[in-house]
Image (cartoon, rainbow, N blue to C red; front, side, top):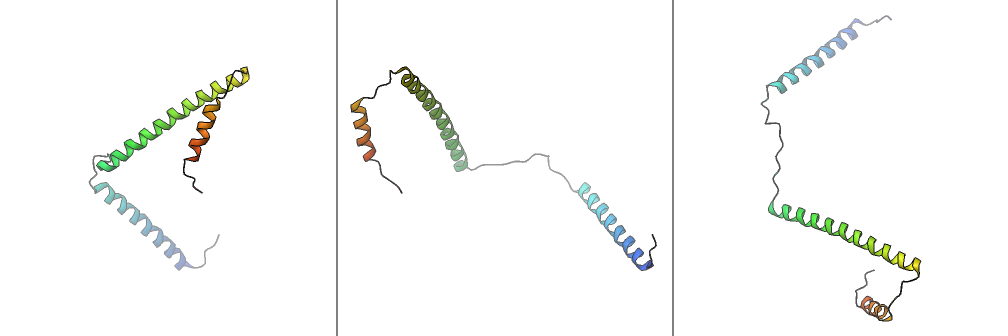
Length: 106
């Protein structure tokens, strides 16, 4: 491979040397910069701590509720499969009346 323009060669070499020198200077400066203890520190406000606690409690309540609902659904399915599941007329009527008192959004 033949390079015709000697000026281009010197520009490429000069650019390379500038990059190498700049990189070495940045590394040296980073080495001289005093470092901290190497640990991050975060402080939460009281409101943030309370919020985190509420979220934790809500998550736990949802998990407990899901478990309870799953157990109850399994019990109902077993009763249905055995043919022993019965529905109380009074409970159905109460559920219908209570459903009417809930606000509808939509």
